[in-house]
Image (cartoon, rainbow, N blue to C red; front, side, top):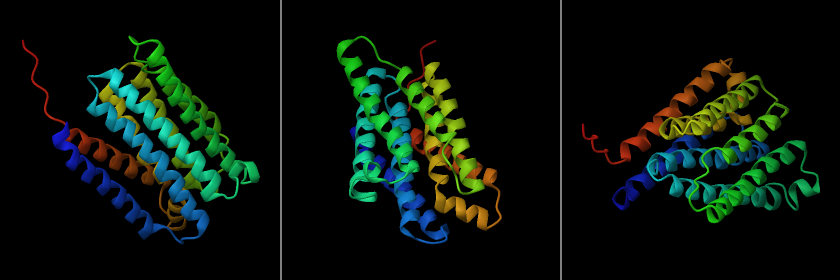
Length: 242
């Protein structure tokens, strides 16, 4: 594992640079609310891609996989809530009238933080158990309830958020079935699709007269390419003895 860390770091950094460059070259303007959307989508998208990568690398050690995933949830949820509260919408974010959309964003990411803490407690109290599905499914169920009532200003934005829910639902199904590799691919694709659903991209797609569905398909393909790249970095498994 240690031998691939430099390659993994370069691969992750390359993806962040690439998607940021696409954003910079396509969005129609760089007003603060558009930049906020970029930051607010990049963080959760990176979280989804990260937990997918963790599932690929630790697919044969479920307890370690779930532990790392829980710490990532704590970090992602905590940093998002703090950043949204004190940096993106100062002085106090949703506690000072940042708006209904921000209340929904913070609610989802706050839930992710709590779910991460809950998973760690389950692992501590039940050492023989590696909770594979409950927390993930609950997180997606709440996200779905919020997303389905989350107002979008563009057609492409609405399509992107709906497509994100579809990809998350597929990843949840694989998670319940304990199909770890399939789950990893689906959740990484969900991260890319979610990143594509932000306002700046959605405005570009609608203003250019492009298809929102085609846009989602493009980013789903990029997500699968990302997952394939992570898979390429993993040492090849030995063939099982006949």
